[in-house]
Every structure is written in structure tokens, then in C-alpha cells.
Length: 627
Image (tube, rainbow, N blue to C red; front, top):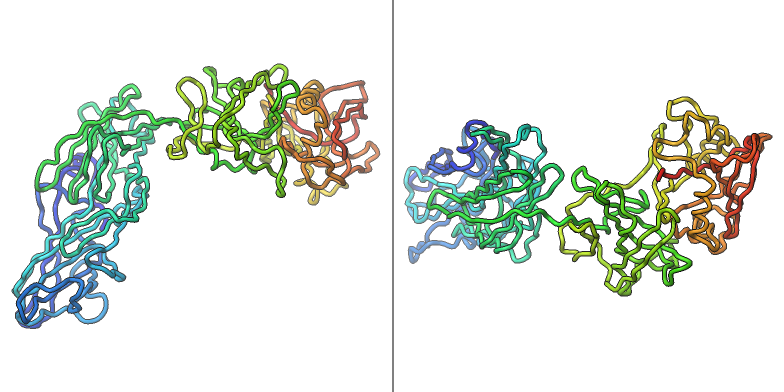
């Protein structure tokens, strides 16, 4: 069944009116065929999913004769007379899906049961498993979450038997309203939190209970539409849920508006009952949300509940981050940057016990810049790499410490050792700090891999080393910022083989052309910046920077920084190429003479060498972010 509600002037009728579906059974008095015709009987309060059956709707039908010997009612699960017979609607009449139509069992009385939606595999009529859908933003999923049930007890074989279908699920309406202008253009999302999704339904009694092994999930509510009324702009949402108890203090609603998430928690128990409609009115005023709750059905007033909406903790799940995409992630609440996570190497020559990789989290300061003085060590990793050339989690009580970087000196200024077990989730506190939280906390923030994209559309993962941010691969752009071509080379002039592995090779003059080879906010590193990198990692810095692949020999290479340097060789000023697999060489922006620039190089040992070099040589380029 599908919704046929227009959400304009009739919004309140859609929210608080109801009707039930009745189905007439035309029967002959002595063993004749049972025919089904659908009619609608309207009541003062509303249907959950619509006002009529639609073409191709299917119902399950039971006709259970009374016992011939003692005249007592039969057993719905034991009787095989007409058990779970499927009927489908063709917009005019109900037709049996397979087999013969049901006939009345002589002159005996019978109990009649019917339900929607039909399940041909139904095994236990006294404990039928039914589940609501989690993504009810989709209309089909919303409609498929409803369950209708009808019965007539002790019916004689009369000409017509009326079946009144009742809703066995509960319906939730949420009306979000505000005095703000332009609300109809705002993206508001509402979901129900941590609800039981599976029910066991007794088709004889029409009762249900939460399944013992129920799944628990959030439910995305369906947007009904928009309405302007009494100076308020409103958005309406709906969902169908399994009847269940929401205990005092449990979170029920999560509302997303303008990048902020709010949660509704009841101040007393709320029990969702079969056939009830519960309406939550939520008012947004100056970024504060107020709520009132009603429940009504066609029998009695369900009462009014009071509660409060609170802003959800700002939590990110670090275990969901894919470090192959970048060693740095930006963390957002909506569209607002609130922090940064990095898989990085912590090292100090002056502070003891600081020599390990870690998953770090940093907040932003009042200016919106990442605050490197408030680094939280969420997950400390082992210093020794594993067989996959990565670093396993330290299983000790060493997590939860902190570091503060001196950005001018590119070194760690202070370190506090952690004393806690590892946690996957961290919270950004109102105080501006970061703290680990229990894994049961809901993730409310979004993390996006930090990558640099050049004018050609090439994307480069980012690596953080102390206070510096570098691209994790060699540059391979073939154009300047203005789109004009760069003088670019590839090893042995073989672009197809070497470009994606080693990147491009550039002469110093091509690299430093005023048209700009680096995207806005990035630059070719200076000589002092290369030395700052070397000094942070001393001794044997290149072992910590080189990827354990393609080098002629590895030595103690472990790439603990994630810099992933490769031996891409170079092009000489004569046009010849050499030193691939033995040396990696990178230009700086420093100039020595009119004909010479300055570069660094990594060999098969652990040092970082440096020398002047003819500008017409073509070497690799790494970019560094502007401070």
C-alpha cells in the first residue's frame, strides 16, 4: 500500500486522522466459494499508510472451522482447511494467488483471520516474525513496515462477512517548526534511535511482542512535506515502528539541522502501543529545540509526555577511517571543521619514551585553525612494524596521553603518557579538548580524507610530520595553475610505466616558474623546511621516510612517518636518465647560483644528503602546505 496524502492544507488531517480497511466476504451458505471484495470504513482517526488497498496488494487468509464433534473453535495453527491462502487485489476484486478458492465448510461455524502483507513462507501463525524497515525515507519501505490484521470470530456461513483490518504497529509523526525564514529550503533529517526492529505476531489474538533476538537499529523518517501556518514554517516526518517501551532517559529522536545534531530523551517512560499514532512537535528557536508529544488512536487519548532535546556529543569513530586514502582526516560537524585526525609518528630526542606511531586527534581553536598544542593520543601503535609493513595497536594501558607541538621549532614541546586502554571513539568537548569515550557512544561527526588536488585533477594523500603537512606522493602535474603546460619528464621518457609510481621529474626553473606549479596554499619546500624535517627525525631520518618497496636495499627502512619516499632516479642535463631504484632526489626552492639550485637525496642508508645541482637536471618534487 502506498501513501496518498497531500501535505499542504491537509497536513493535520494526515497526522491525526485515521481510518480502517474493511473487506467483505461474499459466501454461499453451503460449501460455496468464498469471494472477497474490499470496502473502506472511515473512522475519526487516521490510517497509517493510506486509505485503501492498491493493485497487487496481497493478503494472507485463514478460515478455521469449528470442531464437528464438540462444536468448539478450531486451532489456527493446527487447522489445514484454509491455511494462509494468498489473495491478490487487481483494483476490482480479490483473486486467489494459487490453487482453488476457499469454500465454506458446510454449515459449520468458522473463525476467520487475515493479515497484510502476505508471507507465503509463514510457518507459525501464533508467532509470525515481522520486521519494520530502517530506511523509511523511501516510501516503499515506509509502507512495507505496516502490518494489518483482521478477524471475525464464530461466523455462521452468512452471505457477507465484514473484516475490519487493524494496525498492529505504531506510527510516529514528527513536526519540526520554526519562525525562521527559508526553512523550506533547509535540509532537516529526523531519525529514530536504537529501536527494536523485529516483532512476533500472534495471528489468532492479533497481539505482538518484541522478538527475543530482535535487531536494533536507527530508523530514517520519511519527509512528508512543508507547510506555512500561523507564522511558522513546518516540515513533517513519519515512520512506522514496532510497539515497544522507551524507558526514561533513553534517546528516541535525533534531529539534524544546519550541521548540528540534537537528541530527544523522554523524562518518563513512553510505551508505543499497537494502533497508536504519536506526534512530536519540535520547535527550533535560536538553535534551541523544544518538544511536546501527543498520542492518539481511535479508542482513547494516549496522554501527553514531556521531554528535552539536548545537543548530541560530538563523537567520531576512528576505526572507520581508511588510512590508505590519506594519513590525515578532517573532521566535520555538518559543514563546520571541528578537528583533525592523523596517523603520524611521534618522536623526540629530548623527551623520553616518545618514539612510536599513533592515531592522533586535534581540535580547532577559536579561529578555526587546527590546534597542535592539544594533541590527543587516541591509539598508540607499536614501534616495530609487522609482517605487512604496518604498525599494530599497542595492547597496553598506554593510550589517552597528549602532546603539544612547538610549530616554530617543528618539535614536540610537551608529552603526557597515556594510562588508559585503547578506544575507537573520541569526543570533542565544549572545553576545546578531546577525550576518549566508550564505543557505545553514537558517531555524530563526519571524517573526510585530506587530499590535495592539482590543476590536472590528480589527488595526493597528505601526511603530517610534526607540524608539517606534505603530499604523500611525488608531484605529477603537467600544467601550471593557469593551465599552461609545464616542462615535465618521466624516467626514460616512459610516461605509462613510471608516472603513477614515481611521479614526474622537473627542472628547477620549470618548478619555480612564476605561473605556479603548486596549488593555492601549497609550495615547494624551502631549505630550512627540509632541515626541520630531517632534525625532527634524526638520527637516520630517511629510514623513517622511505617506503619499503622498490629500493635496491632496505636496511632499517620502515616508513614509520608514512612519507613513502621512492627511488625515482633523475634526468641529467644531457637528457640521459640514471639512479632509479638507488636514489630518491627532491628539489627545494633554494637557489645557490644562477645555474644551480639546492636539493636533498635519500640513498640506501638512513641519512638525508644534500648538494647543489645544475638547474637543468630534472628531479622529483614534493609539496608542503603553507603554515
